[in-house]
Image 1 (tube, rainbow, N blue to C red):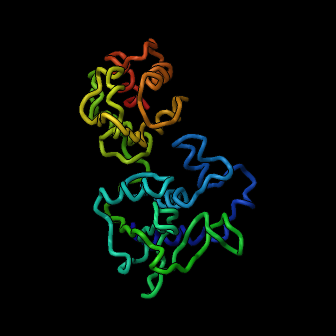
Image 2 (spheres, rainbow, N blue to C red):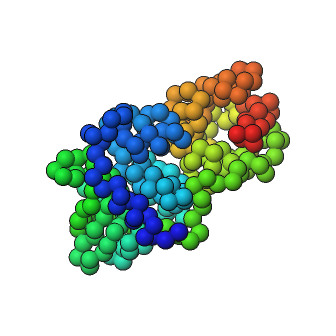
Length: 275
């Protein structure tokens, strides 16, 4: 896979407008929703990151760090992979993030050219033909660029990876191996860690193994857990507590007691293996 393959796919989308799409939401959001929950396919959901995700998957590879619909999530995943490059050295095919107000990143696109004084990009959910909400080619100054990442195109994982769950043990302990299989299945960054979970919830997960990050206060939740909560119909907050355990048990068809013991974990591991 080469950067030009990504750019060819992205360029073909120029002129798309959410306002001319006959279906709810956008084509990029609906594709993302097929893996991560119906919310993303709704009208009005910003789609710049989902556009980038769609382009990479159309090329047959997963975006670096996994699918992302929120710019800070993509930045965090790509930084973890060590892909950041100096913005002034941006090259065609790089993923470029923008910040309009000095806070978190607001927008993302794909670099088409670096003209020395500015970048030419292809972006989704941008102003095109004087109307916001389309795919278009833009000229961007470096002062609005906050991060640039260079995918490892030649070694990028395929968009339909082999089932990681084939090798996980059905042993009743939900640790790093099972977490990574779940993340792969859900299309979230597959680092084997369920991040930032309230320590108080540990009582409901007696068979949680390594890879669960417990914090005493200020838990921010996990992207993987949010995706799982959407799949099982739980409240989507990224925090895996007793209510999420119950929705998981209902989804898996095991006794619902609100405690993730060996029976629930084995059913979960079996589901990962068989699906």
